[in-house]
Amino acid sequence: MGERKQDKLLNIKTVGIREWKDSKSQYNRYEATPYKALEVLCENYKFKDAYRVVDFGCGRGRVSFYLHNRFQIPVTGIEANQKTYEEALENKALYRAKAEHIPAPIEFNYGLAQHFKIDEKDNCFYFFHPFSVNIFRKVINNILRSVEKHKRTVDLILYYPIREYRDFLKTSTPFEIINTMKVPGGTDKDEIVIIYRLREEVLNEEEEDCLNIG
Image (cartoon, rainbow, N blue to C red):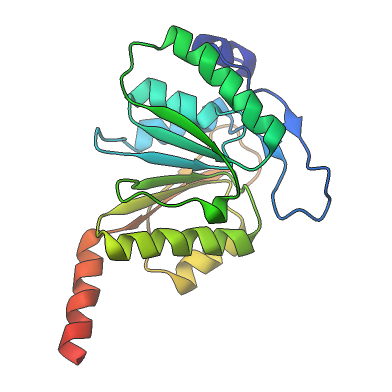
């Protein structure tokens, strides 16, 4: 099924690309995650009732609406482009007119990803290469600080992950890869979805090790 037809099922409009006017921006252009990638993700990674998803660089909201509709879980989208954010809100109004029966909240916040305050209940974070690795580091460090204060298992979902993201997570964080999914029909070897997890048990073990050393 085509992208526009999939959009129509959700009563939204997310097809298209938007470039940043500032060529030096550390934020990348808007381009929605293909529905085929979302289908592969959801067939191989089961979102639980307790999940609260944060979609960084949510654009017009395709991922947010898709996950909210399919799993009926809370989703928050973060968008730094004013025009694109306004389009996400327009889509929300259209979507909610059709999905008013779903009690879970779906929200969109306008602002820079590195300034977003991670809620203690947020435990699943989605990225489709929305910004530079410098901003990615800041966002991940914000997540880690939140987890230190409120221990919980958290997952990162990366679609089309760039090498810099992967290297940073491997060398500088306690996150571990738990699943890698190839998107069918993709001609690019990087057209994959990778799930990273930081388990609460790991945090507890690290804390115990620190106490033993002390």
